[in-house]
Image (cartoon, rainbow, N blue to C red; front, side, top):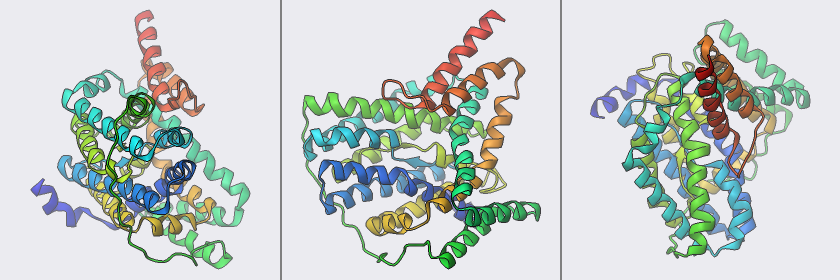
Length: 392
């Protein structure tokens, strides 16, 4: 870790810093809004909601910082979006203290899972082509949303697309930087930026004593634990491995479990490995040298810590950006990872059918038993792989 810290100034290029910022922007543009929706549904006050945001964002930042420096891999951490969506409907049925108790139990279960090494052994059984097919299915909708946004705001998105590919043609290593700047300038000139109400305000976390009940254990802890692993940890480690990073998944889950435990009394519903945003920072566009690409994960962590300190302000800032701008920059930043995933998925002739099935199931956004498409893409893809392998 000392060596990685020493190499960080040389590795922390502008492209790595901007890739980390774009990944944070994607996180704020969607998943965080679901957290706010869940807080409103449960009737949480402003301080409790701000504390929740503080907990998940600071937790993500610290976890990503530690893991990226420790493993020298761009390891990103996020709060499980599926878990936040579950809380929109479920949280009003519990007291706030009961929910905190459920978060604590979920965190302890993640720590035990990380110490057991079981998750890593399961992941090792999944072929890389299946993983890449699932990843391509996840990223496909961002590419589609890019061109859907072109139909709604053609001038802004059209200029951003032209800028991105022109910068690529001119050999810029990170065309997302110039594209983001151009998009912000056009949005500012057209008057679609809504930043007038943004004022810097530090967020003070609120500690709440947990209350442990069977009701909370079965109704919240169990589904939160399943969703964290199925919807985030499995796809998250899959993204890393699709780019050649054999990160110790058990250590990563252990760290996220410990940080989740520390932030649970502040309102954080838990942390897990990032999947979609991770694809932005593991791409060569973030840093051409894979040995130094960990700097993008460090930048991501630093950005999250900075914005987390000003939680309520950060929400106002990011929600003030035009949705089309966010969709465009996310879609463009993820084109390279999508291309890499599709290429890897189809690389092995004997595994193409199973990889295609994993891609289609994930792209179809199938949800079964409350668990999202990435998990089922892996499960059904692996099932098809073994069936086809045994019959060939």
